[in-house]
Length: 112
Image 1: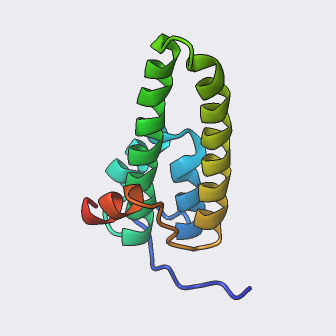
Image 2 (image 1 turned 90 degrees about the vertical axis):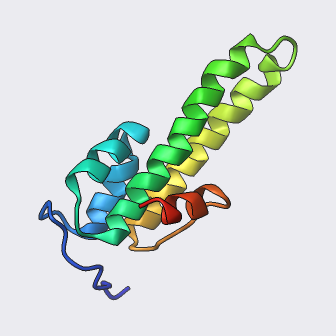
């Protein structure tokens, strides 16, 4: 696969590697890259999508244990969803794709 020109970053890290790093520790690395990357829209998009996606999953993960009866089913499903989304987004970012999640990706794109 030929390498795309994703522009330069203010960090000096390749944009596709930065995009992967945006997801590495969930919303935490998303915040870090949103703060340190000032130029590259590709990296900033992935940073914002990481913040929105994993921030929402983090909040949901704190709420679900307090739900009687359904928590037994929802917690394992939430874990699987979280893991699958995390892996997919890291792969897509590293491949240089601007992979947008439904709703959250649009929100991230509008707010970078």
